[in-house]
Image (cartoon, rainbow, N blue to C red; front, side, top):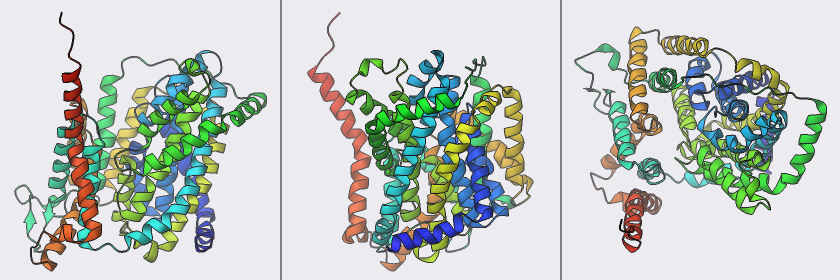
Length: 507
C-alpha cells in the first residue's frame, strides 16, 4: 500500500500542466528522433540535455525519459517505411516490418509496432513499480566499500556481457577513467592532467561536452560518410478500418507480447545488455514458439510485435538499476545518470529517501509518457512519412547547430565548443575503428564515484584492501566482477576446445 500511496503522490507531480506538456513535447521529439536514420535515443538525449537547465530537475528527467520512450517508439517507423532502423534497438523490427510494407501493409505494420510498444511499456512500468522499492531498500546497506564493488561490477558487465572485442571495451573504460580524473584532486585539491595549466580544464571534462561531441557531432560525421544513396520511403495510409483490423490482430499475439515484455524488462535491467539484445532475443523466442516459423522474415506481424514489446520493456528496465543502484542499464541511461549528477542529485538508494518527489514523479510519468507516445505515434504517422523525406543535408545542419548551441549555453565558454569539436572528431574516428562509445561515457560518469568510494574506504581502513572481500555484500559483487571479467576467457577456451574436437576437413 505504501507503494500505491507513493505512486499517487507521483501522479500529482507528473500530471501537473507543466509536466504533462513536457511529456507531450518529449515523446513527440523522441519519436521524430527515433524515426530519423542515424539518430536515436542516445543522440536525442545528448542533444537536448543542455535545455534541461531551464526547468526543475523533476521536469528535466521527465523530459529526457519521455524523449527516451518516444525514440523507442520512433525507431520502428524508419525500419518499416525505409528498411533502415532508426536505431540499433529497431534492427529486429526490419526483419518483418519492411516485408509487410513492401506487401502494401505499411499502415498495419506501424499499428502493430505502436500497440506492441504500448503493451511492452505498460507491463514493464508495472514491474518497475513493483521492484523499485525492494531493490532500493536492499541497497541502503551500502557503504563506500560496497559502492566501489558495485561500480566495478558495472564496468565488468560491459567486459563480460559485451561484444567479442573485449580489449577495445577495456581500452575505452580506461580512457574514460583517465578523462574523469582531469581537474582538481577530490581530496588534496591539487590540479591533475590540466594539459599545461589550461584554465578550462580546472573544472574537469564535462560529461555534457563529451556526450554531445561523441554522440552528436561524431554520429553526424559518421552518417554523412556512410550515407550514399537516400532510400525510398514506402507510403503508409492509416484508416479507421486498418486501425480496427490491426487491433483485432493484436489480440491473437498476447503470448508473443507477454513473453517479449517480461523478457525485455529483465534483460534491460542487466548493465551493458539493453534494448537491442532484448529485441533480438524476443524475436528469436517468438519464432521458435510460433506455429508458422517459416513465415518470419516474410511479413509476419508477430515478427514486428515481438521486438517492439521487448525493446520498450528493456528501456524501462534499464532505468531501474540507474535509480536504485546508480548503475545505468544502457548508454541512454548513462546520459540520464550524468544529467542527474549535473542537477545535483546522487542516483542510488538514498534518492528514494531524500528525493521521493523526484523519483515517484519520474515513475508515474512513465505511465503518462507511454499513453502519450502511442497516441502521438498513431496520430502523426502521415507527418512522420513526410519528415523522412527531409534532405539529410538539412537534418545534419540542424543537429550540428543544436550541438554547438547546447554545448556553449550552460557555461558560455568557447573552451567547451572546441572540446565538442575535438570529441566529435574523436568519436567519429573511434566509431570508424569500431570502438564502443558507451563504456567511455559510463567511465566518465562513474569514475569520480569509483575514485571517491575507493579512497574513502582506504582512509577508513588504513589501506587494508581485504575489506572488499571481508564485507559480505562487497565480496559478492567482487566475486561476480571477477567471474564476468573471466567470462570472455572462458568463452575463448570453449571455442578452442570445440575447434579441437571438430577439426576442419583437409582440402
